[in-house]
Amino acid sequence: MKAIKIDVEKQEIYEFEFVGGLDAIYESIGNNCTTFECPIDFASSKNMANSLYCDGEINFRLEDVKGAFKMEAWVYPIMNNCIIVGTDEEGDSCEHDMNIEDLKSSIEWYPWNH
Image (cartoon, rainbow, N blue to C red; front, side):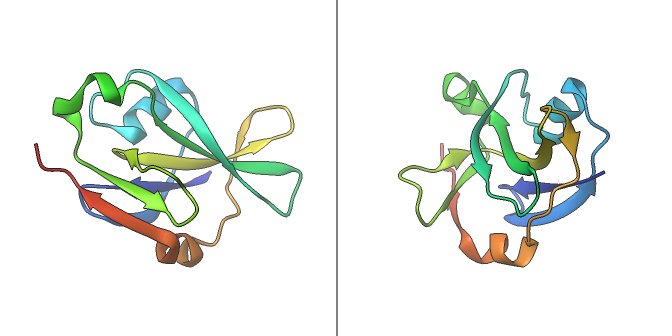
């Protein structure tokens, strides 16, 4: 299924093939992620959500931070890579239905200098 990656090091947003499952989430986020959280659900026109997954413990591993990003309405940025995966009514992963160009135009990048 198609998912979206927000890559803070490359400052790129792109689709990739997502196989699903916990290990795939950790691997897709990268940067030593072992715990994830889903702080944002984007609206969808279907009976689903587009869920943003990010590293849940990155604040404890500042040496692993590669950058951050923020959307216009957000109060604070999210550090490191994230993925966006569709989530159906049962909570299972499914293909996203977001417009990537709209997403790209709404992101502000924050480079990380340690």
